[in-house]
Image: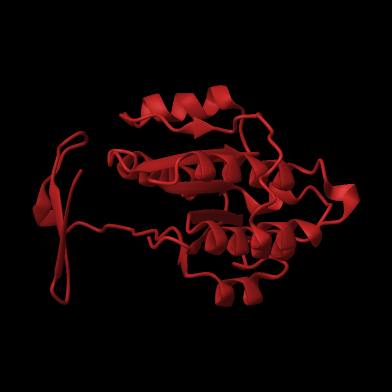
Length: 212
């Protein structure tokens, strides 16, 4: 992850996008010079904290704080970004989150600040397109020299409106998908229900051991 970068994390429902992003933040915040915000419009704060405990995450990060502050208009680039936002969107969720993230970055200029948005579709709330909102946060990451991770819900076909353009403007795109394997054991395996065994999968130089 590079400062000023925007990263897109996609996958269909229940593929682990939220869990992976929370684990990324947990690992990042073990470094003293990193601060992060995890914003979720998909689940309440209590559920986010439950996930933290269940996954054994050791570090805390700011979770969707509601504090709003007016941004410092000394930054011409930030003023230009907000000038493009319609008046009717002043109280929109994505605008409030942008203000919150600006405050975090400006208050901690000696640290690397990271924002996770879960998810792009839920934060748009019909006021602006998912693509337009993603572009705003991309610009914000560049101006603030911060890191933004955007989670995108995709259909079973693997896309959403604006998907093709979005994957070309982000710094990197990570897509999570399920791979189902059916394991057929030979009769010589002689296993009883409840027995444990180790499966070794070899592909090229990669060897994966899974214990069942």
